[in-house]
Amino acid sequence: MEDSVYLEMASVEARHWWFTGRRRILDVEIGRRLPPPPPGGRRVLEVGSGTGGNLELLKTFGSVDAVEPNAMARELAARSEGVRLHDGGLPDQMPDFPDRFDLIAAFDVIEHVEADAASIRTLAGLLRPEGLLAVTVPAFSALWSRHDERHHHKRRYSRRKLEALFRQPGLEIVRLTYFNTLLFPVAASVRLAERAGLIESAGADRLPPPALNAALAGVFGAEAGLLRLLSPPFGLSLLLIARKTGATGE
Image (cartoon, rainbow, N blue to C red; front, side, top):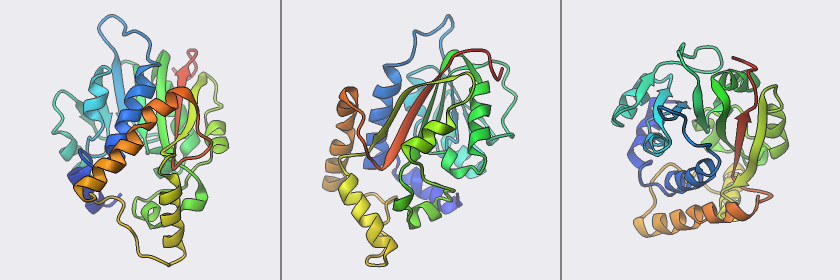
């Protein structure tokens, strides 16, 4: 992404409703599936860590390494203490880690990478047996907008397309669901109106007024409870969690 996007992201991701709501959902969905930590604690890797908005959450799961190809983003992410930051990228420019990981996170990352299937193979190879790979991606090609172009997305995903991407040896899908469902009708209407040229870009990365931001964060974050009960049939994003079942890729 462009440096201006990283700077804008860094200025809002601690408070913006989308980031705070997503972190609440990820905390619940990942936390309830992680096995007990091994002796010495869990090792966690975030790939495509951006400016570091998820690192404090991931530190609650274990000791964290992070990989990010953009130098400015890495510098901003260094604000999170106790995280080992590395230059690198998917699928074939990853650091040579001496040990495997119990949890690998790639939140809204693989839509930026041309070789998405090869990237999943690379991530699977960095997992310990029984380790988890947690991925989020934007959903529905029909919602493609200026936001996707500004963030240099290659694609948006359907549930079927994402599921097919993870049909790889050594991976078992344990959770696949759409999310950001409650706000989907409004957000989808805005995206489609932008595409049709009926309205200008709404500036989704900007921080809304405090009252609106708090209301949106409450609605989005409430899906953490909803997702305990069901898997919505639509949403602005997809979450997939896979488990490493064997030694394939090591």
